[in-house]
Length: 393
Image 1 (cartoon, rainbow, N blue to C red):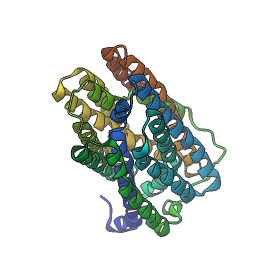
Image 2 (spheres, rainbow, N blue to C red):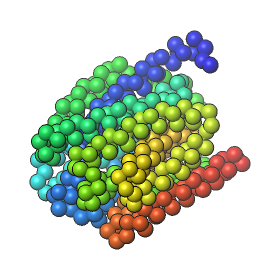
Image 3 (tube, rainbow, N blue to C red):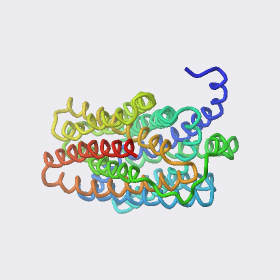
Image 4 (cartoon, rainbow, N blue to C red):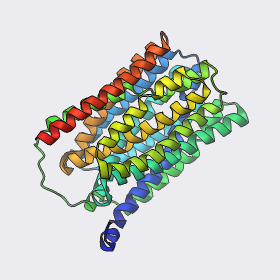
């Protein structure tokens, strides 16, 4: 139990986590609302399953590649808020502009641009959160942030679904998202003014800028790569539901909202559990998420719902525990670079996996679902080896 003095000393850091969480909430209303219908929108514009997988993969690669550059530069320049402003502006403006896209090529360019904007600001945001997490708890800080983040991820698809029900117009659904985008930029300004030097929340330890990353860290990244490669992007899930007419069109964003709601709850619970049980919690969550693709792509509508729930649990684990592990292992002076490397590996694997899974979908849905599950189960083994190596050092 925390003492009363420790609790009050953690309050500024906790407030910072909440401010960044509210910022992410509003941003997620915007871009997760857009993502919930991106796959089906591309299908309406004439894209194929392979194209949808390629766009998703290219977007993630571009986004995660920009995270490495942003992470390295943030370590060197220490201009954290500058990267936040650039990233959030690009990230938030691209989605409402999809209302003006009349061809899948234009929509693809905007979706990739949105991923780049998110890539620029994400490692810097995580570095800022890591400062606060040293005070309030690694798993709890990232879990709380993810939970707030996913409230927006639930609201966004619901808003989009409401617009589709009312207008049956994709441009109207994208256009309404300009409102939360503007609100997010106002919250960013407020957080910047209140916490101009977030690094002061965490005591500065010994600075070792030339220290190489450990072998355990690289093995950890290998496990992350397998996990990312096997995780099906929701754009392909939405494409499958739209093309196969498995559910009515307005229910596709509702399915995404359900996944994000599960994500939010799972992030809180798993973040709390990580503080007590460590990485075993991550391995258990991956085992559950490995079953998502077979249920979604091979099951009846009821099994699709179960698969979406498991997909949300896996997403919550990735968005909370994976980031908390980096904060716990890496010193402050190299944390931006570590997050950048982490996201680059994740994004590269996500791109290759998305292209592979999209290609397999056009040829054999059962094989695609099996490959997705197999890659994630392989990640569990690699992460177990990483833990053995770390404990033996």
